[in-house]
Image 1 (cartoon, rainbow, N blue to C red):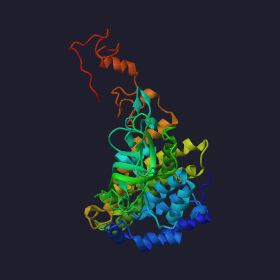
Image 2 (cartoon, rainbow, N blue to C red):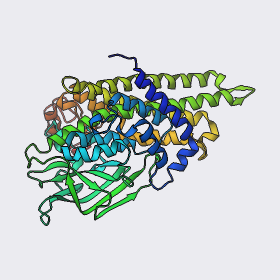
Image 3 (tube, rainbow, N blue to C red):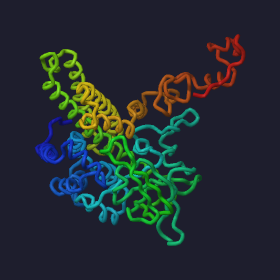
Image 4 (cartoon, helix red, strand yellow):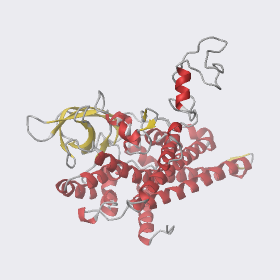
Length: 475
């Protein structure tokens, strides 16, 4: 790995930082989130025209800049620094790579050039508030099947062919096309996106498979409602699909493979997205730290700046170390994701998950210290410290939590045996369906059935203990 950035990469960072410093201060951010689309449309057009930001990681053949994940991560570090409200994340990080990976040549030729020049915004709609599960950042909640980890096959995030989620059926009236019905909560940028990529379950329960569908904003039966989000700089929407006509992204294998191609594409997007999100969180954490340092240098108490007190220095030093460590992890994750497939695929996925976990922790620490060290003013609505705090809390809810990100990375590396794995990222009795964590599963089942264990509380012969029969408790 070459840790030095190229002149082009440095120029992308420098140009974007200068532009955002001029056009995206705290007051501009607060004004932009109250606009109808949730962002400054004029600034978005300027970013697309001047820097080609939406198409930064798209191939030049489709009107993109032709860069990669590393350049996109560096750009998002700068947008995270100012908490830029924009459709960059849902459009360029989630939707565009899926169109490039799964779309037919006609779909790519139609959609990607428009995305690259900022003329088309898009959003990924995943049912069940399960975006991190769909992208493979965390394991599925119901991923334990008969003691074995089966998160990749469970498909719970897409409805699993049962009630809930979004269902797809062929359009019998038209002969071609599909019809979607269902509801999706918490779609990032979903209220203003001009194109929705909707994950839906097709084929019923027996031959069910998860596919992606293209739904234009003006489609009949589509109802979108902007939600009140914790972090207003990341607008979210509820999307209702009432027998909505849709176009399949790519081609359907007729049930063969059970949607594995879609799952692989989502996982690849998740690997790159983890690095980009980590860099964005690092940018926000670094900005919160810088603002706090400037404040403690200027704020005086007992006749001296509060930053001169040793306790304050120690707290800020801890934040600095956390931010720098997270930045290194994010850069490595971006480099690993840019290497492509092959043997590096697992390494990139693990590096991305761990980098995102570390960056979210650093962002939370920096934002919390910013609020605390700003004193009374840090709690007020007028100060920008609360914006960074809300971003930190929202990111962990949307893309984490941290312990599940790390548990997924450990599972990918094969660090735990099957008995140690739990659907909520638990280990050794923490967070799983098995109250005894990594102990022998059969012994636990026997204890729950009243059979006892040689070393258990029920007695040496498997009989009930002195207090009588014990009830099995589901945790």
